[in-house]
Image (cartoon, rainbow, N blue to C red; front, side, top):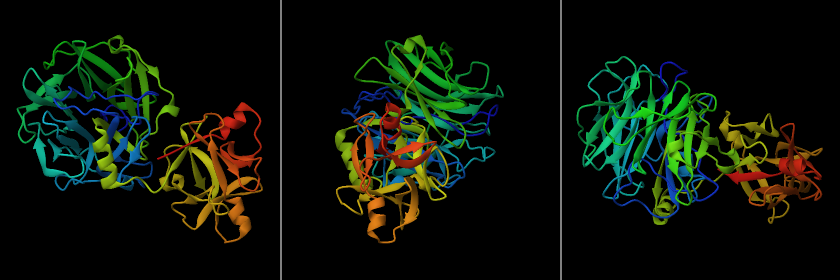
Length: 461
């Protein structure tokens, strides 16, 4: 959740997006007694978009086999929505408990009315993240204040789970609080977990890393780290160099299980909700280098997410239960913050996010002139497809003519700038490819490396 000293917006654990160019593992708090094995992951989040077209305050899920590219489940609709409190959630967190089952925690707040203070958080139990049971609200704080961005960890020394969250204490500013529980039904009295003397929110823990515990949090508009050899409340001291990309909040620490790399994620605190990532080979050093945005793609409209490692079987079961989207998004190779969309029926690439967000959703259907190719059918204007006209791409109604079918058909090839990406060659102008020029889409012959980069796209969600 956002603190009161900056632009409003609850926050936490942005990911968002993904981790490394290598298959990465995830450490969220302490490892459980039955931690998942394999290379699959689940992300929990809620959604917001700039004008609210894509805002939904239920629990959304996405899955990934590499923690980089994410598949939203249930057509990016919520899989469960709170029925108590404000009737909505922010900042969901997924913990695999010691018995191998899951608990889901979330802020009790629907929308962005920060005056709605709640001492409670939403809680669900789940054996498999396909069904959610025992919905309840758990009271954390005795003061009339918020209980924002809850996260849980196993404290082996206490034999209990700790729930940390952001709240105003008697100090009069935001601190990180902690309550202890064995069942997420009742909890101990609140204690101050971390208070450096100024507003801090959005705590995220990595527990037991070479004998040290690390807590990252939002200070002003940056992400900052503290550390302690114990998990005792009050024992953490600040040590890291702040990082940010504009105004950043919602940190999440991620450890690669295939290398020495650590990743720190942050989320912009505006409703625009863009995830950014940094990396380090030494968590103890407290310094970070930005990760290339080409390496990850966050789920559409996702905000303040959490990631939990799951097994391959759990991954397959979640896909079977909820299904993958019936649409795709296309990301520019050399402008990875921009996605293919239509605007005033013109094809172009624009910086994410934007509304209507559905302008960037496409069904890649069999080519209208050759089923071996593809045509780009608009999701929000399903009678229209992208076609070239005077070499510029525009969104036109399919008039059923052979000319339209040919203009709207393209052959998908290995990416001209990166073979793991995609390029699209025109059906009836086979020497030309879809590319962007001044952010507008057109078909052109290609010769230079810049041309080829302009013509390369990532097809994902």
